Image 1 (tube, one colour):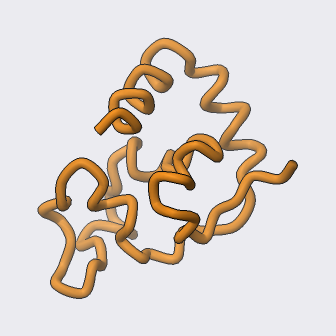
Image 2: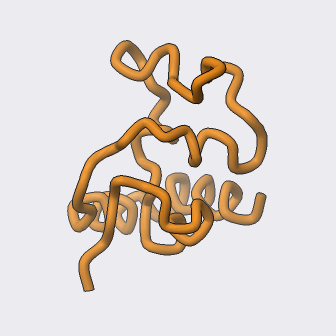
Image 3: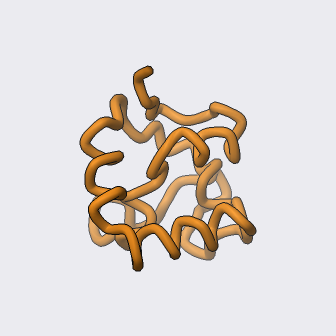
Length: 85
């Protein structure tokens, strides 16, 4: 839950940091569903942890995850994204 609050704070009060971090981010979303179950299970996930609206209209908070390497620790590194250095 702390990570979710941190991401809300960053996107609200530090948008330039978020933009810079997203520019550094490498890789791509594997649609594993790990980030969709951090504070609660997203109601838009199917039984196979696939997002129903992935290609249509994902919310901004979904497209921004992970903002930085701290977010990757929350999903125990199980993500298609990475941050160099």
